Amino acid sequence: MTHSILDNRPALAREVADVSEVAGYLWQKGWAERNGGNITVNVTDSIDEEIRTMLPVSEKIPIGRELPYLKGTYFFCKGTNKRMRDLARWPMENGSVIRILDDCASYEIIADKPVKPTSELASHLSMHNYLIGKGSSYKAALHTHPIDLIAMTHHPAFLEKDKLTYLLWSMIPETRAFCPRGLGIIPYAMPSSFELADATLKELEEYDVVMWEKHGVTAVGENIMEAFDMVDTLSKAAQIYLTAKSMGFEPEGTTIEQMEELKLAFNLPK
Ligand code: 13P
Ligand code: ZN
Image (cartoon, rainbow, N blue to C red; front, side):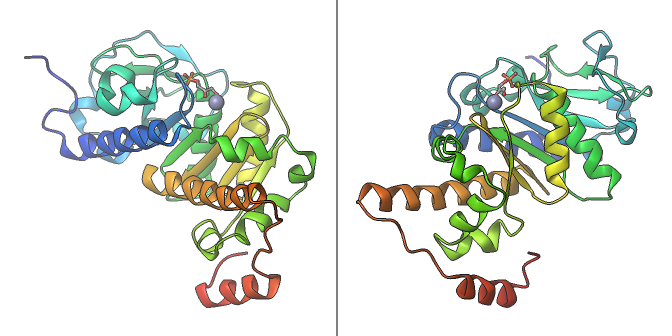
């Protein structure tokens, strides 16, 4: 019988189960080819004293930057090069818990196996550091590769600020209701780079969901389900747009007045 750090830790096991569930959805959606996409969840609230003193299963690994708000925090992370469809079935073989060390610039792996976290860790941890710093209750970050939304970023007209936001909001009222801060756009940047991490942070000031041009979507939320739901809602709106186009017409979209009415009725932030 093999032991897992999830044994007798229902709160932590629940966090990991939610990640597994979402990882399965990402695969089913066709958004997670091979190792595409990554997830990190701040699980610090589910960490007990025993884990806090547990010996790591890795060396100390540098993050590459100092993230002061992350001191002593813990994250469950998808492993780099690991498949979402495998994470769905075997989370502790395709992901791990990391402990951010007191220097705030390095981490070690506390897990069943030394699964190295995602190559987008710089972006993910920078986002978590930003969220904690501003007192946000958000705990989850998701990066994924939705076909429809990425295709839209291949058209320069859709890269203009808030162009996609209004277009997608106008396809079906739920989009504005459940993704009320809209969609930020970041010009193409090298995957895994600090440039991409910093551009993402800047957009988070205004948006919960950010498009990485010709690469994917990154979303933050209270929990991983919420982050997934926002991307799913936006993808649905994109599909309505593309379906109308494939039927040979430009969809009319709800009017600015109808969207304003919705904003007032639902008390939406933007
Ligand atoms: P990882 O396998 O390192 O998480 O990378 C996947 C990805 O989508 C990079 O942007
Ligand atoms: Zn990616």
